[in-house]
Amino acid sequence: MLGNRDAVANIAVRDLQAARRFYEGTLGLKVVAKQGDELLVFASGKSSLFVYRSQFAGSNKATAVTWVVGDEVEALAQSLKGKGVAFEHYDMPGTQLQGDVHVG
Image (cartoon, rainbow, N blue to C red; front, side, top):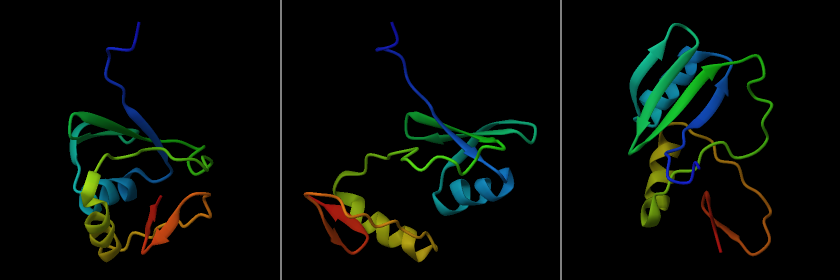
């Protein structure tokens, strides 16, 4: 039924303007639609991110979005770190931490 349809990531945030600065300014995504002060839609390749204001923002302790970047992961991580992005480090079985990148 839905296997041949595109999917969209939905990300809840408390401050939509701060989120816009991050997704647009830091990550380089482009706003393609806006719904008042409640929702921004960003283009990312052939995908979209719906970033919306919610009182429940910050309650998700799991991965919300994954970008497929291939061999560029280390260079992109360095670039993001240079823009002030902090990376989480986890003790994950079967992986090692090389800089800010977990490798297996």
